[in-house]
Image (tube, rainbow, N blue to C red; front, side, top):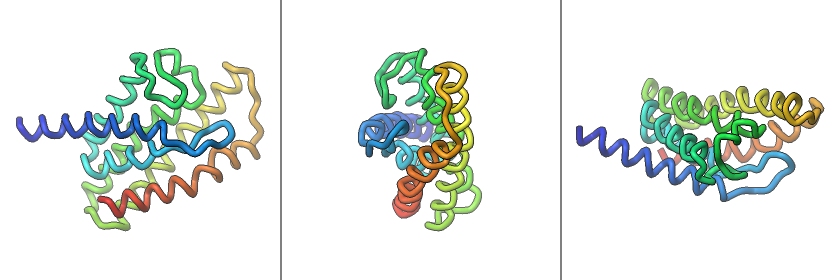
Length: 170
């Protein structure tokens, strides 16, 4: 009972860290690079799969309830924001990072690899969601070259650095 309470408190603290990480950003066209990724991966690695996913879920629920913790605000209507796919994919991303750490240990390379797999999952959900909402809801066509450049090549170095830092901190 006490251990679960401790884990819930830590989950709430990570939800707060993710919220703060949202506003520490490097501006880029269309998709800002933030410290969210670092804190999401750390949540999974430190808290484990279950409580890592819970901490990110708390963050998502806070944002959907109207607390402006997302990069462009909050509220239920944020579901129609093209970047919401990334936010939604943070939950399984944290779970995946925690699961890999639980299965294979807390070695630096394992944790870094877990973070990279979580990033791949986040991109795999976030990019198509962004494209579909931009194309069919906002009526904004995005070229394949733009998707490759803005949504993969630009954030990838920062995300890999976040994975390495998370691997070192774990």
